[in-house]
Amino acid sequence: MNSTPHNPYRKISILLLCIGLVFLLVQTIDYINFTVDDVFISLRIAKNAAAGNGFVYNPGELVEGHSDPLWVAALALGLKSGIISSESPMAVLWAAKILSCLFGFLTIAGLYILIRRLFEASPPAPFYASLAFAALASCGPFVLWSCGALEMTLVACCYVFAAVIAIPLLRNTTKHESRSLLGIALLFAIASLSRPEPPLFAAVTMLYLFIKSGKKLRVIAWCGIPYLLIMGAFLLWRWQTYHELVPNTFYAKTGGGLMASILAVKSSLGALAAMCGSLAVFLPFAFHDNGKIRSVRALLIFFIAAAVLFTIYSGGDWMPGFRFYIPVAAMMITIGIIGIRSVFVRMDLEAEIPKRIIRVSLVVMILAASNMMLMRNLLRSEIGGMPTGFAGLPGQSVGDHVEVAQWLEHYTSGPITVALGEAGIIGFLNPNMRLIDMNGLMDKKIAADRKAGRPFDADYIFNRKPDLIMIYIPKGHIPSPADNPQADYNFKILNNPHLKNEYQLAAQLTSFDIYNRKDTPQFNARP
Image 1 (cartoon, helix red, strand yellow):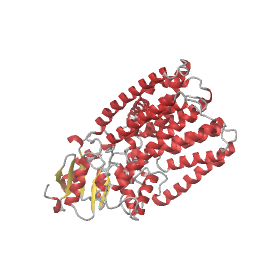
Image 2 (cartoon, rainbow, N blue to C red):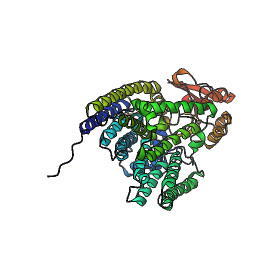
Image 3 (cartoon, helix red, strand yellow):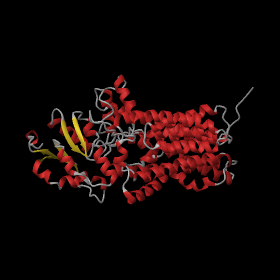
Image 4 (cartoon, one colour):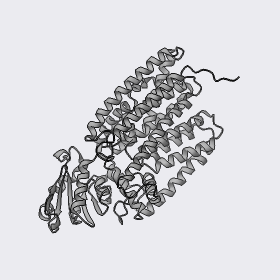
């Protein structure tokens, strides 16, 4: 009678998987209301697309004010087909959250598969895979963005499964090389249609496969060409639609000068510690000679390096939770797992099963739980005001913006033009509002000025004669240009004589001062 050989790592592996699932569930409930205001830009564009107004924020204005076209298209398709209800304004938000949670879980599962395949010849492979599963499931920033309703976990999922497919290619152990290369091309195409930076990751990966492969023409034919064809078709559509080869956000969001780049480097070091947690201790040991692991390890390092380059070029990110590193969180943890295995092998711990392995694993998990709570405090200090669980706000944490949205709903009717630097939920809940985006995401001129380093042109805003001008004053204090150079429009608007001559204060809300044109008396009475 055939029987499966007993694997002494089985029990500890199951225990680690259970711990990981508990970590994931607890944090998901805790972070479920996390939603940055930018999410609602994508949701408004998706609703416009589903209504036949095109992939635009303001109907009739051909500006690509979002960075996630495939994500927006998927939500628009859900609305158009009726899978997502169009009656409840927050239904599309919850659909986006479910998608991001789903891809977050698939990424964690993909990391498990990645580690199993990486150490497939080693009996402890299930143990290392389960340890990686629990490590990513306890990673506060990753779970936070799994609840964030944006495309970050979709890209992370594409990356981790591309790495899974690449392992047998790098080891020359696959019988389906062409199919594997095509799979990598499709995964990177999905990622590239979802975020602006994945083409950099695709180029790095394909170049590495080309160098390592003994069949270079096959890499070109089955990986490079399919990817280029898909991206070429998309770029043609983008040019015909918006008359640009890159999204308008490229101009509005990148840059920031030397200081921003230095801060981005600092943020990168923080991201490494935040993603790896207790595994960060083992990172230096991952670079010993690991035989067959070496080529895969190099590919993972290239992924992380590409994320660092993009972050520095972009000047960092204002959003909490190290957003730009979420797609490579699995790669960082994999490097940590390679390090811990190297230590175990050198200390001959793998031969002393199960007591020492169990002890070390539990210590790592206790440290992971401590890091999880530490990151919870850090993330909540960055976000502020986010209710835990399903309590309070319906799936989002931008209450001061909701207050403005409700004010608009109550005090305006019909089409209205608003000059504002916060384009998210305020515009999402007021579909008749036409936005003059002072941050430039939906305005090509402001975005081009920002990219070129030119000062904000307040006269440009006043010459367009908006009905309302809204000044964002978080916590009762306007950020100075020294604190946030991209918020200098507040000072330029407030100090422009047009404001005093043509506008009057209509309302002072929690975080916004609202000015209306003096020739629109319907706003004269303050709420």
